[in-house]
Image (cartoon, rainbow, N blue to C red):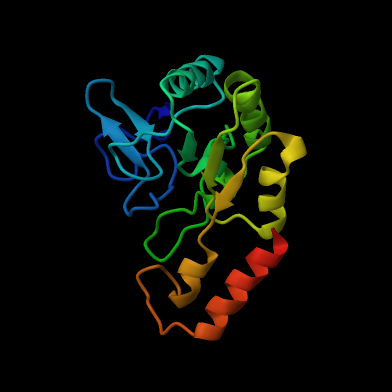
Length: 197
């Protein structure tokens, strides 16, 4: 997992002591204090789902072992949650603050420098040499061009992706700011993705 001590000059019990200003995609800070260690762990989503530190080879091998275990039991593939967020900028710098004062982690977590390396390694370690199966990657904020990289059969990464562009079409400044959906926008988005892939 991603563990960090409090921000320099702060005690862990103080407000604003989180290692970075990142906000969770589910609301609130992306860091949770662990009272037993006095350190924070990163959770870009739920506090019950700490982010794995994929940069650690032992973590990747443990994930691959679990995946092989399921394949050996007959599953036909995997749906991989927010898979384009597994490679993070290891500096974990502060993000640009939003209206809630929390920083945007997006530039430091979406499509990180090693994401394609990790997925290609996963293919070699888990899927290569097995009967045909299906891998679907949830890839928020991905572009059509990036999706092509993830799904290019010659690259051995993912078979398919799903993204959320169409889900965001009725949003204003935030996902909580809902506006009327224009059907023509939905048709244009879905059509562009179908043609692009």
